[in-house]
Amino acid sequence: MRINHRKFAWGLLVFCGPIAAEEMDIRKDPVIFPAGPFEFAPIFEAAESYNDNIFQQNRFKKDSLLTQFHAGGQLALERQLNRYALTYTLQSSQYHNSPEDDYVDHFVGGTSHIEFTSRNRLDVNMGYLDSHYQRGIFLGRDLISPTGPSGPTGQNGIDALSATGRSGPDQYHLHSVDANYRYGRAEAKGNLELKFNAQDYTFQNNREFTAQQDRTQFAVTPGFYFRIAPKTTLQTQVENQLIKHRQAEVSGFDSLKQRFLLGGTWAYSTKTQIGARIGYLRQEFDNSKSKEYDDVTWDLSANWAPLSYSRLNLSIARDVNPTLASDNLRASDRYRLDWTHDWTPRVKTQLFGSRENAENLGIKRQDDYTSFGVDLNYGIRRWLGIGINYTYKSLKSEDARLDFNQNVVMLYITGNPRISDDARTPWTSWY
Image 1 (cartoon, rainbow, N blue to C red):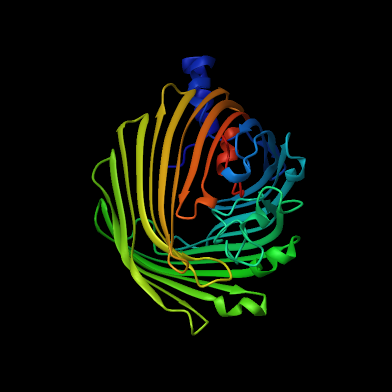
Image 2: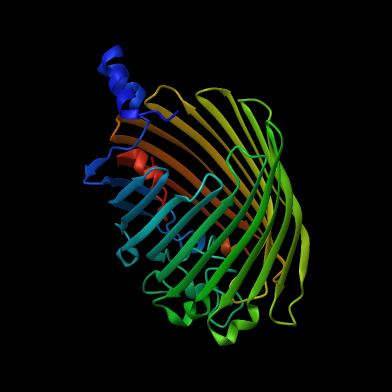
């Protein structure tokens, strides 16, 4: 049975009064405005934060206040079980002590959910992103160090990309498409799945450093799911990831990674769910001089909700990723734990922490990355929320020049919080 949420909310308002309805509605669906056959949902967030190490480098430490906002909207159309949406949003960042790092990012994306029949379902997401990377930061970019693919021992040296090494951040354009096809009824014992993803990166400036990072990445993952019991599902997947560099000089570092995974999910109760994927990983480069690498790999997760308003989530993963334009591999063990607690329908806190122990196999360097923080937010209205966030990050490396400690405190306000959650944008909602 499909529930009409608007009629339900109106009945609740009549029965319980406006205060109770507001309390129940504060974390529900986003605020939308009808526009003919379409529905429009605005997006707006603003934040003011203090960052004591904006370049994530202790050797060139610099602090700054940072003013940011997200603005845009989503236009959606629903036809029976199908849904189509077009989203535009921007992110503006202004550093009070480092105006060279000011930037405005733009994103345009389209999403669709199509159910051809009860057995055939397709989700497609396409996007264009005009964005940048903060100067000095290399974690999350698949780079060996802040100096780019050449690493600390390259001809430019590690200081070249430090706080003052470049006139501005690395700017890039990203075109992406993501598709997920599923065959089989949702309630059927068996389902077949095929995932496809393509990302094309083109850098716009600092070409002496970024030209080698121009690339196209493909990921194809076939999978099979089979429910062996009402609360237990087995699955098998083969992840295939191909990276193709566009610069001929580094084409020998084009790579293929495959993960052969077997696992499943188990719902022990409504309070406890466990998931696991364990398997074999193989990594190879086009360059015949680069060694092939294989290892065990896994993704483990556990979710526990001792109370309906309190949730603990734990994830553990082991994986290997190549660094760009080199044959260095980053083998990492990752751990993450977070606790979310709804103190009232309006007040929520989240504590989170993560750890990554990474070994750079090609350059024989160990990196240990730690992050933790706390977030407190308050839903003033269904369409308005505020919050405060603290995050700590640190890197301890065998190359001490890469070490850093960073503290960030943020105050934020979010308009229409639920659409900020639902919209598929490159930057997540602060709320």
